[in-house]
Length: 293
Image 1 (cartoon, helix red, strand yellow):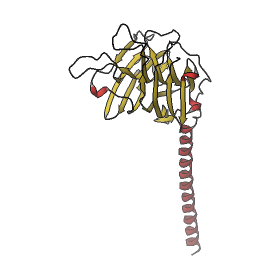
Image 2 (image 1 turned 135 degrees about the vertical axis):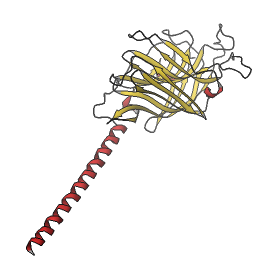
Image 3 (image 1 turned 90 degrees about the vertical axis):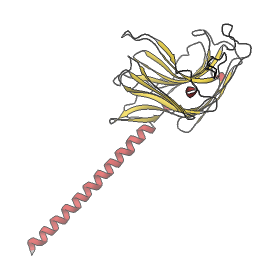
Image 4 (image 1 turned 180 degrees about the vertical axis):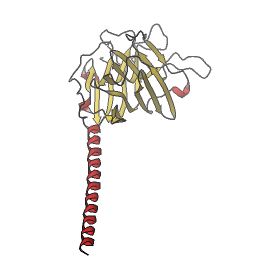
């Protein structure tokens, strides 16, 4: 009888021990999950912070935010496309119907000194009769990449001039540029019932190499790179990023980390007076850009 009681007591104690272990493991997993989620939303344990400032590169009016140089795997976000209002006095003498100011909304990166610009620019279109318009009429995907020490040469390309790849002011699109494997960046532009997807060969990009990623809204100026931004009454208004995020690998899984103010360097070039910005939410921002006249 005594042995039977002891056996029951040991059995009961063992069951309580197992229950305690199970609860402890469950709590440990919960704490770990919360901890990772908190890092995603705020700062990863080994995350490199971005520089406080950066000098402007002359040639355009642009709002740029860029990440720290870290093990990021790309950038993405959702944006409502802006309206471009031209300066009627700044027509392009070499292209009747075109102007010297243009609009672009794009992402990109820099890995081992190889720069990429990937997103949407205000472009000519192919008309229903097959002719190419003189005027710029829609946003169309573009991909630009500098050369690399491997021997890869610089290149520029547009998405085909087809209606399924045209986006218009006021439409909302989600764009992303993600390093999906070594030397391969994947661009996706999707919204308003349309989608463009492209793999970009980039020799300088690798998951094991630290890289920076950026988001840019601009008034571009024809043949003006490296020169002071030219006076213009052109403006680009109504752009609204509802979110911007950075890709990162955490415990073998790629996550999206909000690109909040502590995760980017703020650039308003050539001067803050040309911009009307309004941040909202964790990583949202509305952007209006004005020329200098």
